[in-house]
Length: 229
Image 1 (cartoon, rainbow, N blue to C red):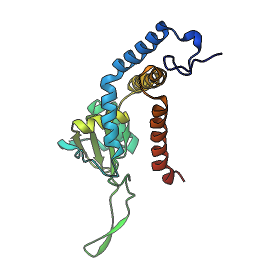
Image 2: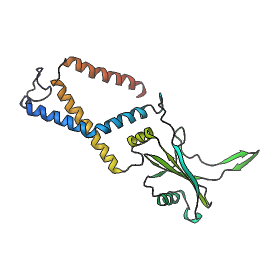
Image 3: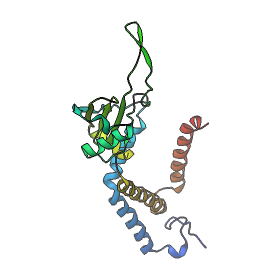
Image 4: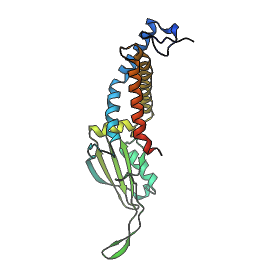
């Protein structure tokens, strides 16, 4: 299989495919895949920057804001365990997200209850169940002390940047969103491959283009290598 290496041809493409129709087909794929994911590319790029700086050189997007909170009367026999609390809350508030223990600052979850000192005496701390239903635009948190006749509930709302980050992570979203993002990822792959083939038709030095690619990969490897060992 022969390849054409002159400036006017497509590098790494067989000679028999070096036709105007093939180049037009590549351009259309590149353009339409870009059009399909244009808005999502922007959203994923912006939220990716925010997520990339979530711990180092942190970009503050604000904490979730409490919208409402109350104590709801409940029959204790309906909540024999933590799983029952999750099922009750999901049915009571029409929540579809999976119930999970809320994450604490620093990444931890619920700490086990034990004996603590209070006013000079060691006392047993009451067990408390906490569950959070996280969705892109906020979360609902339920808190219950076994045996009590009320459940504490709280609704928190995210700002726009918080929503973008949660959409990027797929927080509280189902399989349809995952499959939709798969199409966006596929569009990026198609744009990368067609773009790689089309750059050989552009004006400029191929050596310069290869140098840009090599420099990009070199910088990425230099930045990542110390943390990979």
